[in-house]
Length: 515
Image (cartoon, one colour):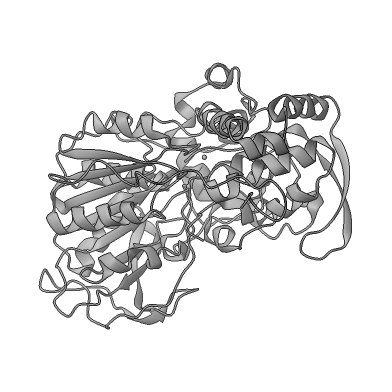
């Protein structure tokens, strides 16, 4: 999901950026790899899940997903929190099946694995982009343990209502807040890891009566999909991994490096663009000077709140400022505003920054579980890197090593979980797998998909130009997804996607780009 950053990489109108989320600057929401898409109205027939593949053992009743009128079927399936002993507390997993539109639906559904870690699949708003797939297949969304309505590990101090500017740009660390929240959970956080959640998911698959499934993982969801492919290979027909986070990507160790790559590309393209370079001369140098000033002395700002219009005072640190910059890189549509915002900030006009910080909706905030983020990262990532590693990877970047340092601080107080032997080894699989990368992705850029591809023997990697974190907003990516599902193979799929796509034009004023 940083001399100004606060979390980890790994996941946006189909822009899917986390700009509407309150970000506690210490760490956890700095670079979440999440998918949050607008929703449109669609309809579905109320056909029982599972078809003829097996007997359904989950009672589903009609329901509606928030933000869409598409008919769905919802239910719960209980699993033991401690799967090994099968004793003690049980977790009711929230299960949603959106039935295929066709009366002659395919037997194998599409299971959606959301990002984060910590996003609830049922609140990810993905149905509109899956309409073509839903013509022939059920769509299944299961809130993993610790998210959504499956015993969520909430922490309002980190992701709750933070409506003031002072609260929004607060860059205090997460450790104390997370300690207080953890004390109030009815959960053993050592048991909220990806490998356990993927065994839960297979239980749900079986209870719904599906013999095999197709997986669509987004950002952190790609890690979850890879783990499921390793633990239950015979149950996977195809896999689609969008914004790939392979087992060698430790969150948030590489965030500063990958984010700087995306930011450098943006600034270079502004310098090469006649209108952008004319509107914002010497922008890189002026921004570096601004960062030096903020490092020496945080700015005291007074800005009219973008939502209320009431002037508010707040303090802005280098770290909080860069956290906002990083979040805007997820979506090229939002990144098109970054040069304008940087230009105004160098003139100590903080209004554009405040407006962007409160832009977008609240869907992401509602769908996230900070506790699950740390339950996963403290078990699966933090044990594999040190502060020295973080400083090495962040060397030469604007963002620095604050993000991994913040995560390591929280994790130093976290109960120790046990991972399966060899958990961090690359996943070896022959499952037909489509890997999708956004050319401009700041958290899971194309090299990470190439790393995963090396051990996926029946795979195709496609880089979509002009898009950022997650590619599903591009029509060609959705077409490839549909094709791999219909074929059950990546053979014959075109490796090219969106040849005419490019970064959206930069805003040279509040009126927009030069016509």
